[in-house]
Image (tube, rainbow, N blue to C red; front, side, top):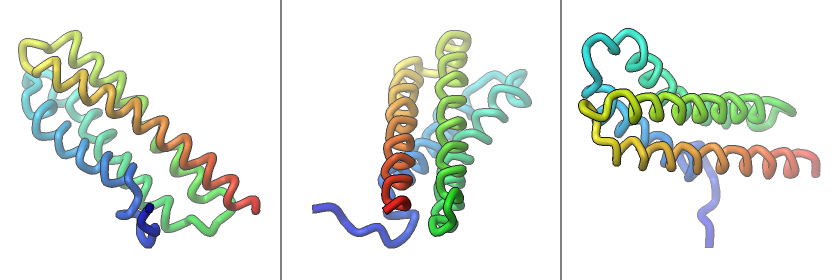
Length: 129
């Protein structure tokens, strides 16, 4: 039996993307070379943090016709950006960052993008009833 959703914190995709953002910052970003701190590291930090924030902000607008939908779309875009950034990290900086962690996170963000898409479809169907 599924637990009722009373808050954005009850959404599985929020919980998972929040946990992943902590892992990205602690295990990936902090280990990138100094010369990447103002480019790839900053982008990864922003994207990783943005995904759960967008879910939370969108949830607060769940009663607006297109409110939640827009934020879920933006969260999907950020998740896809994380896949690209993690792929770059995997391919360019395997001597700084464990490639297995990158692979795990790439798979995770791919799954998150699918979860966000399914949530947006379910939400759209729910709002049209």
